[in-house]
Amino acid sequence: MIGQNPGKYRGNRQAISALVRETEVHRDLYLDQELFELEMEHLFANTWVYVGHESQVPKLGDYYATTIGTQPVVMVRSAEDKVSVFYNRCPHKGTRLTGEACGNTGRFFRCPYHAWTFRLDGSLAGIPLKSGYDNTGFADSHGARGLTPVRHVHNYRGFVFGKLSDVGLGFDEFFGESLSSLDNMIDRSPVGKLEVAGGALRYKHDCNWKMLVDNLTDTCHPMIAHQSSAGTAVDVWKSAPAGAKKPMVVEIYAPFASPYDFFQTMGIRVWDNGHGHTGVSHSIHSDYSAVPGYFEQMKAAYGEERARAILGENRHNTVYFPNVTVKGPIQLLRLFKPIAANKTLVESWAFRLVGAPDMLLERTVMYNRLVNAPTSIVGHDDLEVYERAQAGLAGNGNEWVNVQRLYSADEPGQRNVVTDGTSEGQMRNQFRAWTKFMTMGA
Amino acid sequence: MAFVPTDQQLIDFVVGEARLLDQHRLDDWLNLFTEDGHYWMPLESGQTDPRLTTSLMYEDKLLLRIRVDRLKGKATYSQSPKSRCHHVLQQPQVDARDDGDKHYVTWTPLHYVESRADEQTLYAAWATHHLTVVDNALRIRLKRVDLVNCDAALGSIQLFV
Image 1 (cartoon, rainbow over the protein chains, first blue to last red):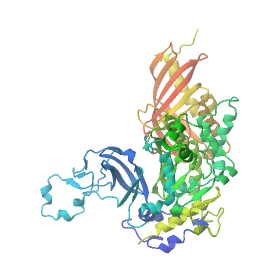
Image 2 (cartoon, chains in turn green, purple):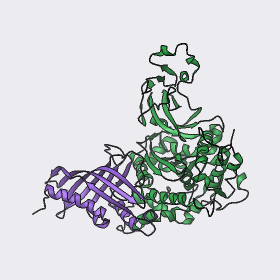
Image 3 (cartoon, rainbow over the protein chains, first blue to last red):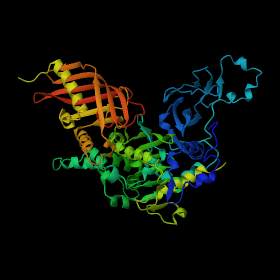
Image 4 (cartoon, rainbow over the protein chains, first blue to last red):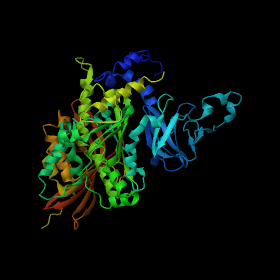
């Protein structure tokens, strides 16, 4: 941050590393604003952060404005076969170029302040009354360079990621085997293609972004925190007439109330660099009713064996560290946008499996509003405990958060393993990655 | 004689519905819906499809029952302390009436306040009620609530607008 005084953590790699121990992490990871700003400068610059999906910008000149960490960026279809990502500011006075969150800018971005224009590749196209810059050395200025591109952009089968800094790992090395979860979500389309379906649900959370990420593989909370919603759904359904067909909404809600052994035996797969997923053998998505006609389409597209393998995966939450998660079996993506140490915006995006029956999208959309909306009772359950944790952590009696469940001393050396489904090993994996990317490089 | 509501009775029904919500008489409120009734809060301005487009809420009577029962539940931590709500309605306008089909549509601009502990949030909305007559009484087939800022980043809305 500009003009910031040296604090507790800036320039002190040792102090940052000391915050993460093998089985506990310091509360400052959730509370400290200086640490949050260092996360934006290092963690969110040194890692590959999800930007958007290429289906949001199908036509030349289509754009979508978003953030990487707290940095404003704009994703644009810059050529038929290319999606580019730029910092969303005019190089002249800094004006953000876009007004709408998405739209089409034509062949140029045109700044609304002084009408400087930029080609879709970011280069400066024109300045009104340009002669005023003659003999000023303008060609060597930042202004003449046009829009600043995000340094590293990778489009993985339609999912666009950006990395702001040169520090860190290449895309393939960073994600490794974890890309299999994105593959599985995409392969569920008989033509291997996804499309964003409509706008995102946007839910404000007064808590640190990592509470949401920690919770993705926290399988000891559903039967407690969601007793109120899922438990009530199960109770209400009990009074349904005998033989009534279980509706989709009950199929979605009820598994949240499953007992501990359901979650213990589902397993959690832990990958390098903070990635991992719940639901190795089964998950809360395993027992949804078949959608008529869908398996036949998949069989025709992939052959029976491969179709069964694709649909046999029931991965629950896949964490793509640091701040995005996908649910392949239900085609949802949630992005946890950090705003401040105690503020996060949760965006929940629904995807259409191109070529598949509409009933699959109906289920995706239903799941999204039942679980991820600001009006969702499951969402209310979760936010309540996050906000209570954010408040309770201020208490000085104990400065540490415990993540010890099913820890073993040989764990840090293990790679791509499957753990007990109630282990906090994936959370520990995320914190190891946190330290790694916070302290990497200069 | 079959019951044919006057415009004033339609207006009184909509006003009375808001009062049940404000007074937390949620079982009585739920009984205002037909068995196939829905409560819909779109995510997009002018949204026409609740099925394949994401909404904030699109709930049948089963989901509304779950919501109402949950609000009463002992393990409902997000309602400890409880939320309260307050509706201010503009006079409902009768937009359509078809006595033969027993189909009536009203339109009601409103302000809605939800409070919990030290926080209080104001929302503005338009409510569209699609009403019918069942057993000589007015019932809700569809209550559509369009928040003015439906597509904004929102905090929790725990009660019913």
